[in-house]
Image 1: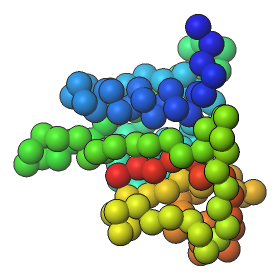
Image 2 (image 1 turned 90 degrees about the horizontal axis):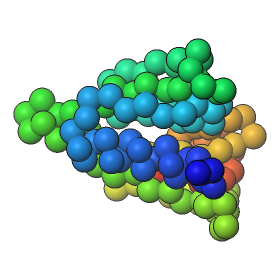
Image 3 (image 1 turned 135 degrees about the vertical axis):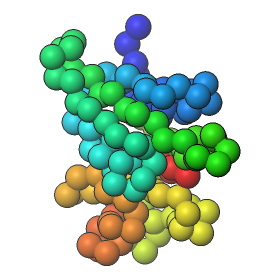
Length: 134
């Protein structure tokens, strides 16, 4: 079955793995998913990741999910797709939304690649709103 929205598939796989308390989730790779994985790692939402280029046509991404020590609950509480293939959502620098008063992140696709909403605002860039993570 062909996936019509690979980013939504990526978010769903991570969300489902976190809800099922899996330690590692494996996802088919693409350049955009690799950038998104690096953002999640830099922002502290995942423990670690590994790009395995030897498997499949484009390779895979192995992501080790992060859980809170005290409660055992996943660090990623929710991930929501904003811009969809049927309805793209764009935002200027000043209109990039804040997620839960800055506790979450907005991932924005800009002319300089994927970055968080805060980074895009610092560099005065707007772009396509990819997803919220909190």
